[in-house]
Length: 600
Image (cartoon, one colour):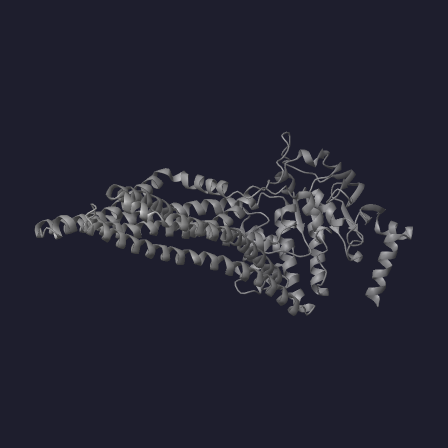
């Protein structure tokens, strides 16, 4: 089935106003997911508190041991202190292991739920949403962006809490021991603050740009791989490689500068850490020599705490960059989750258990944007079991009519009736379950042939699937494959010919047993023998069903009950094949032109 002739127009009609990026709101939303496991999260925070307290207690006891036992040469007391330190660091290691173990479970559960919701939501979005986006770019949100969030949650949440607690505890103990040395130690904080601000002001936008560039590159790769046959047919390898290089260069540039600027952080922190250590050692030594209430043990405690003071700041700075990258990914995930689902069925929408298949268009008009109508005031009536064919040049509105029948789009004005009911008053699932499609580009999933046929009706038995294949003239070629119905197709159904794919698509439609059938020209680019098999299978499938056929080759629709000739969104001729030929109009010229080409 051909795509709408104006994808940009689709985007204009379906797009919503972009919402401003808000990293605080994004973090809050992620935290709401984490909060669903409050009990385990509380245990993690308790272990973080315990490990932070034990981490502070160790150096404090070492300093006190120097003043009270080593200087006083009290070996018995020193041994007791050493035993206590062993237990402290054992419990410190245990609490650290537990908090990491539990946090991994929480993080993976959170990411699992987010990824599941994202995938489910994608299937609830309207067709116009997919018309205006690269599939690879959407795939990047489900994979790359979610993985970015996952890796950050696994480690960063614990690191942030631990760093904050360690920082608060360190400053508190330092103030208790010596306000003067604490004040000297804090001199580096303004330098650190302005340095980190300068860096993060640059890394934040760069990480967001990197995520966007990565999504665009993934989308381009997916598109070019899917269209590899076209690329080679038109010898456009150089073009796509140059475009790939251009997109890859943009990704390389943004990633390079994001990593370069973020790499300044540990360098800055190490410099300030060493500077702080030198200041404390120097000033503390002078104060101790001058009897200013500072002991050797206190200097040792401060020297160790100065590292513990800068280490959480260093960790916070590093985690801030990691969080910025994760927030950029989470924002892209939430952008999709915030997209409006396909419009809900009207409150009084009904469920049709049985459908006869009578379809009527009454003055139906539709446009993909407000400036140009794709179809204009179309009216026609399809009786039960009739075959209606649509012909006309590219962009005439043939595919649009089919999209409107299946409610992929809704009319701007006029109405469409099914068995006398406006289709807007019928539940979408009820409408579509009575329809089946056989498209020009048949799509098969990775899996066995049996599974692909059963996609038409999941509860069908093996016997019913094989019967459908027989009716579709597919059984004979299936039996020749290794494993027959258990032959496994690769992605996009590769492994069999295009004609065989079409026969499987017809078998799938047979198994669905629809009342309304939609056919795109299924015999283009197919050899004559396969075309005859497909045509025969389609005739069986169409028997007794209301069928809508988009025809490109007019010799395939000569038996249609009605032929509607579309041009520039309007019906310019209608009638049977013989009636239209006798009118000597547009259809006559089109048919004779094709006939001459085939004869020639």
